[in-house]
Image: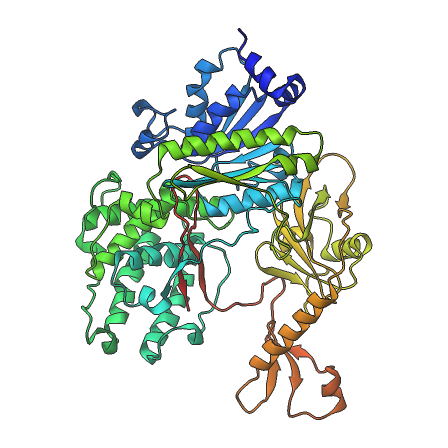
Length: 631
């Protein structure tokens, strides 16, 4: 009997035919991914592409049953495909694997995602899940989002702009620690880990934007401590410059970094007597007293001594520096499955713990803390993977509305008499920052080094019907608004436009909703093209505009300068009214001016905050809590 005979009876010949012709993307080949891959093959999906950045670890073998002892250190995605070949022997399903980060826009540009009919998420990383959710919104592709945490799990079918997206539901509030506890007086292993991951790593290998530390953001009144932290912040920027200038055949810069962080900075803290009246004083670390062995093994089950931590830290800094330089100083994100970034956090946090008389941790323990890992349960993974596959069958209905109506949100039940519960899908949250705005693709062909910002703004006004706009490139780089027009004659390539970047467009008149454009850069022998998508941007609701104006007025009142000047300063650092000036000019706001000068192409300086720290996860191996540092 043919394998698909039962599928024909259950699904029908027509639907099974659609499934056999479909091409799907599976992101993640861990606990859920291994189970889901088997299910998709046995459902006769025509072509499956699987992506995973991770390699197989010993701890994976108790729940990721496609892997064996001989597979340790091998790529998960390629090994998973080889493991399922024995029940794909008739080659009904074409399988392709990729070893890399799904957020790599060079390896996986938007047009690569565009080939798939459905995307399956089996990720244990919140940042990556948010990214795939946004890609699905840009392309309007169905997304089967799934995750497990211990005995808990859920499957969320996402039909872009029809149902709730991944970001419609707020994630759990993260744990927090005061800045000065992390920076000056750590007392627990988690303090050292948070310092290494969310401060030191970001300072050395994060975004290439210098952020001044505002004394008002610190939870201390000790002038000496504030001065020490400000000085430390500036010196770390100088260390980053050393990394940029580093040469692989000379690692002297690494010893300068280690001496600065673990010796000079500690000596400076020791000079602040008020910090140590009731605390044990830290011991500065002199690396010259230890023997460095760059061939040391990074065993994740044993406690490393000081020499091992120093040696592994040097190796990780050298490797990360090479990556940072080769990628033109593009920020390196922390990933618990990235050996270099994890070793950096493990070694630097352990050295800091040693200095502050805090118990050190094994690499295995720190990986769990830094990734907030909860032991995964194999049966939960299997059940959730099964429901993810079953829910995907609804994507082959004859209409989007029918797919929406038949799909269900699946989640583990809190009742003793059943394991799972389900509910109908609901429409997206109108206040969701991701699916409540319009999205499109900005296509730049053969002209990235020719078109200037003014060309783009003219196109935006013509096609999207905005009058006056502000433009933000990436996460927070302001490149244009009414008061910042220095970039108008600058080429797009020089501003930072590149394939895979996102451009946010906001209406300065507050009459139309915002939108986002994914930048797609291509080249061939044809003409130069700058194409802004035709989007129907809705007007803001009157009530919403009034609420925003009321909020802006309240914020303006809260920002009144308490000095003698009597200035009201808005969020952009613009003096909008001189209270002491009763002139007609002041009343009409014509004396609006910049409180601070900005250089061309630079983002206005922000207050120093620690956010986006230990990644919040609700799937596979991860817990749904963050650890961040607050002011």
